[in-house]
Image: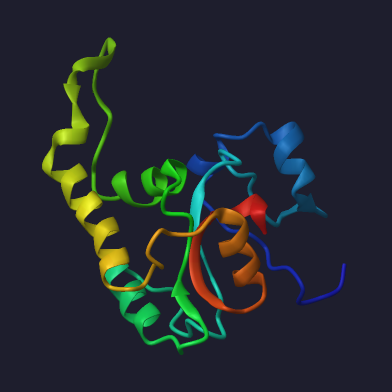
Length: 166
């Protein structure tokens, strides 16, 4: 292993207890030193950003992200993604605002507690509508392939995506 390419991964014993040490953690270790953890889900949404465009690493809030996105030049989208895709909207925004589909009880889901008409879901939807109204997202949106391709070409500052996409 070449020095400086990968740093040891430090985490708590509590976190490590969630993974079978005899298989998964051993696969992510070298000479007994841990260098990473497997994702809990391959479908987790994360903010992927281009450091050449968004230099503040990383924006801590949505407001900071959008402020940085608005500073992008005319030939670059500060923030772009397929906002008609519920996967990115739910994982990135609705759940972030505290919205839910069905309430939960000790017995499971409460199908009579519909969370999509609660203030948290309304705020998330208002945020998404604001992306379009502010001009940060093109009217009519785009699809994942276009947003991802533009990101790889260096024409998008940030986008919600799955880590396996990179």
